[in-house]
Image (cartoon, rainbow, N blue to C red; front, side, top):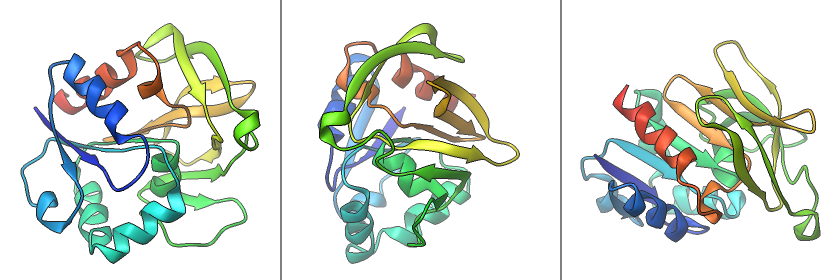
Length: 189
């Protein structure tokens, strides 16, 4: 199994380490030529969604990535990745990849000082999943066909729609590989 990791900005190295620990092969997407490699899945990391979006357009990757996801390429988006995959963002009409039927609220937990760690149950993953939130969004609402996988304080923080999987928290910043293992199982299905 070979996973493409969008490595334009953000916490991509931490995702790569998780994949290594699980024995999955990975490669970085930094330019259009990288995207042409065969891949079984894609990880869009946390970081700054506006910066990532600009780079996706500047590097002529936006349309290719959107088409691949729409065509069934399994994708895992964390934090900023969740924002890029959302069909809509509250109070914002910027065009995104928009492949997942959900509305999100950016920086919903506040600025950097509002960052926190908790553990909560997550469907298909475990009863006490470590969750690190950094300037995190949460999902306001989901459309038909989107399964809610986890909630914290009444807010949706993980969801899945077919081959798309998102978390508003950063599983790559903890030692537990269970969330990444879930994504790899999802690809095998």
